[in-house]
Every structure is written in structure tokens, then in C-alpha cells.
Amino acid sequence: MNRGLVGASLLALVLVIIGVVAAYFGTRYQLRLVYSAYVNLLVVLGLQVFMGNARVTNLSHSAFMGIGAYAAAICVTPQNIKAISLPDAPWGLNTFALDPVTSALIAIAVTGLIAFLVGIVIVRLSGIGATIVSLAVLVIIHSLFLYRTDIFKGNQAFFGIPQVFSLTSVVILAVIVVFATRLFRESRWGIALRASADDEVGASTMGVNIYRLRLIAWVMSGVLLAIAGIAYAYYLGTISARPFYFNHVFLTLAMLILGGMRTITGAVLGCFLISFGLEWVRWLETGPLLLGIDLPEALGLSGIALGAVIVLTMALRPGGIMGEREIEDFILKS
Amino acid sequence: MLERRGHNGPAFRFSKEMLSVDNLEVFHGPIKAVHGISFKIDAGQCVALLGPNGAGKTSTISAITGIARATGQVLFEGSDISKTPVEARIQRGISVSPEGRRVFANLTVEENLRLGSAASDSNTKTSIAEFFDTFPILGERRHQSAGTLSGGEQQMLAIARALIAKPRILLLDEPSLGLAPKIVGQIFSLIGDLKAKGITILLVEQNAAQALRLSDYVYFLNNGRIAAEGTAESLGKSDTLMAELTGIS
Image (cartoon, rainbow over all chains, first blue to last red; front, side):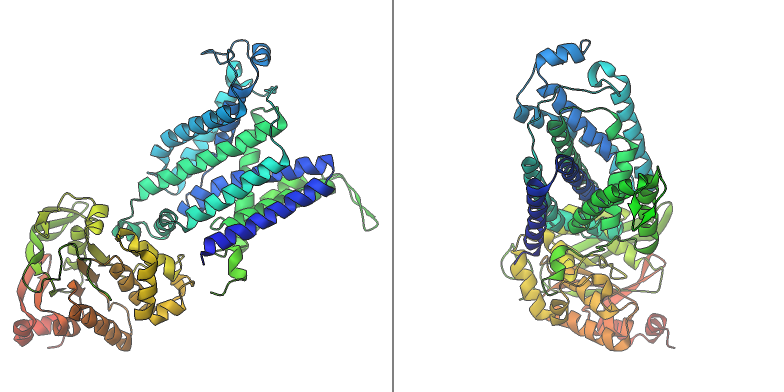
């Protein structure tokens, strides 16, 4: 029995159950919250593919999500809307409109290509060097989003994107991505990549081409982040540069760190714990009446909570809640 | 069951040159660790490279696998692999159990073996199942992280991982290093079994007594040069050399 498939199936079941419960019992607001949790799950899984397997910290993931979202938005938004919102767009970007599937495929290809070009540099670095370069990539891409207003509209809303996605679409996507990332983790490439994270020289002695494998994982990560961006844009119908920057980097990083970056189960667990936990913290921020006590308003509590999650996890349990364990390890005998 | 990867029919014994190294110089940055050594191993032979710490034994292994920067010629089954990348050398059938074992601590025992089998064209699953018959202790711990194994078990895993690719030649770098005497006995008995099965072995060791017992031919390295060579029998008779090798005078 393939333990990876068993684990991915169990996680898929959990994802479907959360989706069904939200669809049947959730309010409009809660549905939006659950949808955003699933989009963030796609991001965290995309982050896990590279960071969890190669164990090289990446801080540029939200930028790649943004590239996917904007590329799809530019392709799919109707021409008459783009004529108004992007009147000065170069290269005839406002003179055409494609169907959502073609637009998504183009967005994935564009993000994959940019990820490949950035990856050529990133994969040759490790430790602090790779992290700093990824941070620089985040800043460069965000600056382009902000200041090339003729293409991206900066902090203004890029509107008119057809809202072709529903909660069902993102649950299906999340299930597919859970299987893809889990099977990658268990594949020869995934094992070799994790081995290289343990011991680079030892892995080279086994004939592992570390740079090539890291590049494959980096590009795969970019593609998954593009998919997350597309899912985000296709549901909301409106995007702007702000959601693809530091706050989002920090949020999704905290999710991966809390659950445990080395496993897919950790990524899923961390994502949902923080998505729903943060909602509870936001409620506390408003100064509610709790057990007869009138709590004071505490603006900024969510930021503190998120930071505390990272600090406490790194200090007390650096491997995250799951460590090396996947969901099936609790059921199948070792 | 631990047959060698056979592209050319039945195993040759002591007839065909498997590996030959000519005028090999190995560098670690600006430092030359090995100064133009030459040696050869025939198919089915167990050849030992003995010598004290810093003699250049591990550097020689690193040059054969392609990890270290080296000059000179390395011929494998007649073809020059001096410029061949590491990955291709492993795929051609050179397998190494590195010094210090270097099992991947965060991977499970089974994942370590799957990584080892990546160079093999054979059916991995069957191979791993077969390996667990040969190494039952590893079978029992197949889903356990390799870092939780004892030193002896980790060494067995390192050897098993090198063997699973069904190599043409097995390079064993200090397999007895840091192990309890009882476990050392078990590891050498395992190496003896592999030799009996016709597997070509290059054994790098400091444990001269055990290595001499197993090897057909021995090269003694000192300060990056071959200081002596001969059959285990002839070297074993040299009191001076034995004193130098074993540290017992």
C-alpha cells in the first residue's frame, strides 16, 4: 500500500468535509473566509514544495502568486473594461480578451518562466543568500506591480475579472494539489531533495544533482503559486498589489511553520489553524464581552498573535506541530 | 540475491580490469591531498586502501566518484571517466558507502534505500523487499527515521543503500569507523559475504587486521602516496609495515 496515496486521500477527505460543511452551513462572510483559507492552502502547499523539501527559505512566494493573478487578469478581463481601466497599457494588452482556461494556462506559463529565470540564481545559493535574494525578488516584483500602473494599476483595484470560480472549484484544486505535492514529496525527486537538505555532500555522493532538483521544485512551486493567484483573482473579480506583499508572505509563512514545513499534513494543518484562529483573534481585537468580562479593544492583536506563533513554534517546536509525521502515520503501523 | 548489475553476462573473477587509477592527484582547494597514485582492481576482487588519518584514502574515493577535484586518469571498465559527472559515474555502477555513514537522518530507512536505488534500472520495490530479507533489522525499522538507528544499523543501512543500485563496484569508506568491536565483526562478516558473492570491492580502512583478512590485494597509503603494495599475505608478513598499520610494535 502506498502510504503517500493513503495520506493524500485522508487529507483530501478532510478538505472536502470542510468545504461541504462551509457550503451548507456557512454565511456569505464565512464562505468568503473559507475560500480564502483554501487559496492560502494552495499558497502554503506551493511554498512547501520548495521550502519544505529543499529547506531553503523563500520569501518571494506572494509575488509569484501576484504574477499568476495579474497575468490571468490581464488576459481574461473583457476588452471594453480594459479600455477603461488600462487605457495606456503597452504591447496591446488592452486590445484582446481570452477565455478563463486559456488565460489561466498563459498565466501559469508566464509565472513558470519567470520562476525558472529567478530559480537559476536561487538554486545555486543556500541559507541566508537564498533568503535575501528571494526577499529582493519580492520587492522588485511588488515595485513593478505598484509603479507600472499602466499594466497593473498599482494600489488601485484591477477590476472586471470574470468571477468564474466558486468554493467547489477551489476545493477541487486543493485536493489535486494535495495529491500532487504529496506524491512529489514521496517521489525519487522529493526524496533526493530532502536528502540534499539533510546533507548536500552526502546526496552528491549518491549521484543527486542538487541544483537541477531544486530548480524543478522551485518552478513547480512557482506554478502552484500561480494557480493560487488565479483562484484568488477568479473568485474575487478584483485584485490589487497590496495583498501580494509582506503581510501575506508573513501570514503564509506562519502557517507553514506552525503546521510543520516538512510535511503536507503540516501545511494543511497550519493553514486551517491560522485561518480560523486568526478570525477568533480578530474578534478579540474588537473588544468583545467574553465570559462576562468586557474586554478592551486591542487593535493589532492579530499581528502580534501571528508573530508570537512564529516565535513560539521556532523556539519550542522547530519542526512545527507535525515534525516529520504525515497524517497516515497516526493510523498505519510503522 | 545480491548479484552485481550485469550488463555483460556472468561475473568475471580476477580476469577483467574493473577500475584503474593512473597518476591520480586530488586537491582540496589549494591543498594537494593525493600525489599521483596509481592502482587497479580486477572484477570480483576486494582491494584495500590502508593508511593512517590524512593519508589520502577518502580523497581517493572522492576522486573516483567525481566529488573531489582531481587530475590523472580514472578508467572504469576500460573507459576514461575522469571528466564524467558524478551522477553518470553512479549510474554506470560505481556505488559508495561514505565515511561517517552519512545516512540521511530525516529520511526513513526505506527512503534512504529508495534514494540508493535511483541509479538502478531494476524494480526498486522488489529490490527493497529483498533487501529487508537480507537485513531484517532494517526491515523492522523501515518507516523509522534513519537518524534514530544505532551506529551499527546506520552502517548496515549505508552499505545496503550502496548495494541496492546493484553496483559494478562497491567503494566502502571506513565501514568500521566509530563502531563497537562486536559490531565491527558483524560489518566485516557482511563484507566477506559480499566478496563471496563476487562483488568487486574497494575497501578503505584503518582497521588493518580485518581489512587484510578480507582483501586480495592491498595498497598502503601514507601522505598521499602509495608507500607499499602487495597481496594481503605478503604485506601481513612485513613486521615493520604491520607495526605501522596497526600501531602495535
